Length: 114
Length: 113
Image (tube, rainbow over all chains, first blue to last red; front, top):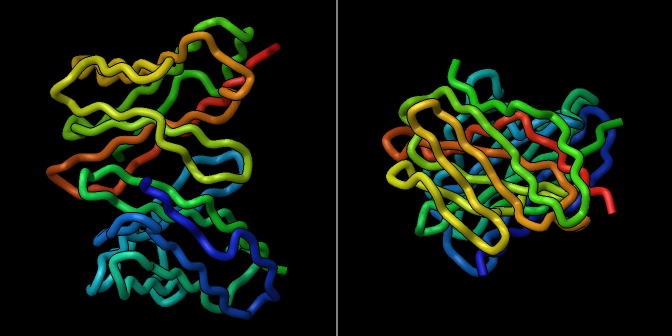
């Protein structure tokens, strides 16, 4: 149980385009999901907290207009990187919070912006 | 600011030995701690957690120790196997504040066959 999926697992896009990443909790409902970013050989850094049915809460320094988050259902949150640039290339990881407050992580999405 | 950090960036052990990975945290309000294992190109995998009302918790081959007095957390892996090779992160949160996790910088565990 407690499986979280992400789609796509990797994506390559041109600079200036937008990319949508999906995060799904497959066997449990999650009112809260989190989005993290991880650069090579570094730790995970929280970008935003996604709450079902309400606006996301962004961490300081994360542009909400650039990283659009939508949490329309209890099993799905999406992160859209708008007007992506090479510096946005990173490993994006989501997590979903279970009813016991345990966070289960997705497998991550590798974004490469050319 | 508040942070969670690790003492050793890389730990190399022989197969069959026990491994100990350490973590220091600075947020005195933290009351929930988790250890994650991350293999290359994958998301973090939950290993074991502990709440602040405990000082020790055991799982299968793993034990987490919490010393709130010195704000120190450790992960012990018994009979380390090559499949244990990965980067291990400690993370913490506070139930009285936001529930998002703050991650430490990670320790790479290398198991020599």
